[in-house]
Length: 477
Image (tube, rainbow, N blue to C red; front, top):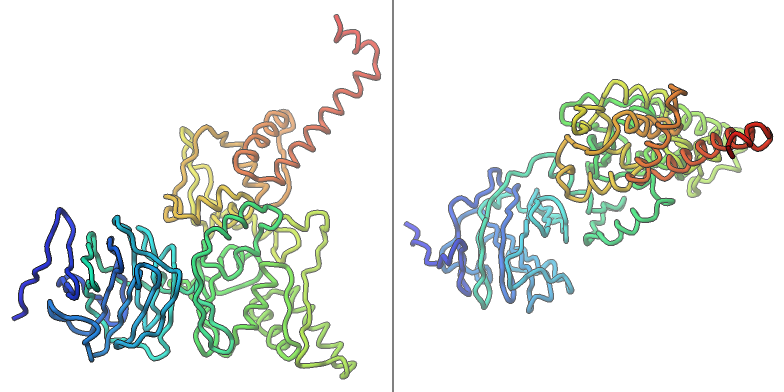
C-alpha cells in the first residue's frame, strides 16, 4: 500500500517539499496520452510537473526515474528558462520564458499524442506560451505528479480536464507544420495582435486566413493530417462546401496542404500564388467546391501553357487574383473577394451558421449574425469575440442604449458593403443614429458613408435657400 502523502496543506493550498512529488489520486487523464491539467502555483525557482503511466511514490524524483515519462519545468535556473524532458533527457531548454512567481499564478499544460502545450492564465487552451511536438510520442502517460526542485512549491485549484477534439484542434493554431515536416513553436504574440487591430487599413478577412479565432470548421489535409481552420459563413458564400458534418471536419484525401492553402488564400485574400506544377490540382479542388472564378482563371492559364509549352516552368509560381469590379471599395468586405454578396445576405437573413444572438436591452432578440462578419468590420467586436472576454465563449451578446433599427442598418451594411435606407421620411434620423453607432463600434467605412450622405442632404437643403431671396428673408425674420 502506498504511503500517505506528507505534504503540508497551508490554508487551501498544497506545499510540496524539495525533491519530492505529490500524486493526488484525482490527477489522472481520462484517456491515456491525452489530457490537460490546470492549476495555480507559486515558487521562487521552478514549478515541475511529471506525467507517467503509473503513480509514483512520495519520494519519487524525475531525475532518478528510468521509466518512460515527460517532465515540464516552468522557470528552471532561477526562473530564467523553460525545460521539457523526455525520460530524463532534456529536449527543450528555452531561455527567457520565465513563468514562475512568488504569488499564485494560473497555468495549464496539455498533452495530446505527444503535442505538449503550455499556457498561462485561468482559461485552458488559451494564451499559449510554448509548444513542442514529440515525433516519437509516449501515448501511455496518464498520471500527473506535482513536484519541486530545491525549494518548496505551492499548488492549489489543480484539476485534470479531458482534451476534446475541438480543443485539440485549437491547440494547432500556434504550431506551424512546414511542408517538409518541421515543427516550430511560437510564443504568444498578444502585442502584435493589438498592433494589427489598431491598424484598420490592414484589417480584413485576410487576418482570419487559417486562424482558429472564430473558426467553426476545419479541413484535415495531407499525409500529416494537418488540421486547417476555416469559417462556414465564408466558405458557404464563396462556393459549395460540405459543411453538414456534425464534428465540423472536412477530410481531404489526396490533397496537399499547399493546394488547399492557395484555395483558402484566394477566398480570404482575393489573391494567391501557386507553383505551376500544382495549378491543375488547384483547379480540380476549386471545381469540386465550385469556386468558379478560380476555376476559370486556372483553366485560362493552363490553356496558355498548352498553346505555348515554353511558358510552363514547374518551379515557377503563378499569380491568381479575384477580378475586382469595385476598385474604389477594394478594402471593404466583401468587395474584391470571391464572396457572393447575394448568398452572404441569404445566410444573414436565414441565420444559417450563425454563432451569436444579439439582444438589445428592452428590445429583445434583434439579430442572429456571424461573429466573424462583425469582427471584419468592427475592431471592438473582434476584441470582444477573441480576447477572452465573456462574449468569447458565449453565443449571447446584450447591448444597451442602442437603437434596434440603427443596429440592423449597421448589420445590413456589414453584409452588403452598402448603406440601404428604405424609409426616406426617416432617413435623416436613421443616418444620424447609424453615424453615432458606427463611431461607437469603430465601423470606419460606414461612418464615412453616413457623413457623405448627410453632407449631400444638407447641400440639397442649403443651396436652394441661398439662391432664393424670399427663402433667405424668411430665415432672417
